[in-house]
Image (spheres, helix red, strand yellow):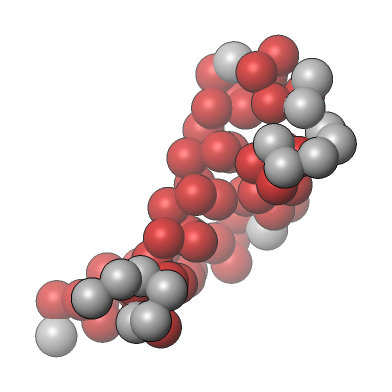
Length: 70
């Protein structure tokens, strides 16, 4: 089943994109900072969400991990 039709998988993909973009921006900021507009701007926005809401994103990752184990 595709991640678009399974809500739990969709949430997992969104969390992984946020965490990955935040990590990439921390290591290589020039990759995401030059693309603030258009489709690639979504990755820049995901990195900003990961930076500013990191405690909530971490909590969401823990909750997702627990839900996947059960």
